[in-house]
Length: 167
Image 1: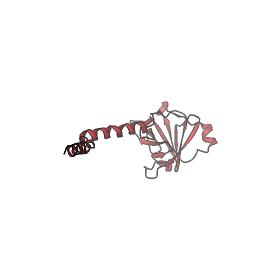
Image 2: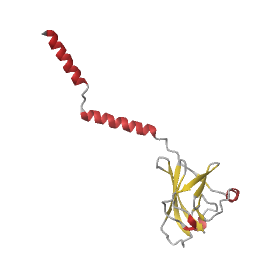
Image 3: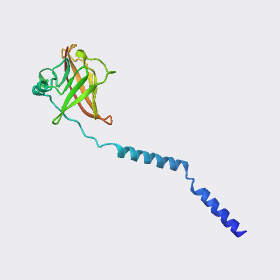
Image 4: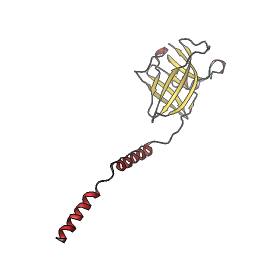
């Protein structure tokens, strides 16, 4: 009889071992998921585009129909573009590299056959038309914002300026 009581007590103890408080288990699971998500994200690094020079435009044949984004507006507009948007592809210089972006077909059309969104290997670019606050904007020259997103959908660079398009 004593053996039976010991065996039953051991079985009852083992049966209770595998069951935790469901709220506590859910909390631990959520904490584990959050930790894995945090560990899988790359640290944030801003993207700092450099102006594409006339020499670059000539060397790489970038003088095609489309649009170019320059920082600033009016008399404060930069001479060289930060981004050149074409029908099928766009270009931006980061450091010593001229990065190529593919036009996203489902994005909005811009004059000259350019698009409003371009996708690269580790980032993408959105071009947004801003309200014309007396800048004299028209179909080929208008105030815009360039937004660069990193691979994890964070804004890595943003600048206001002017889009100049040509057909």
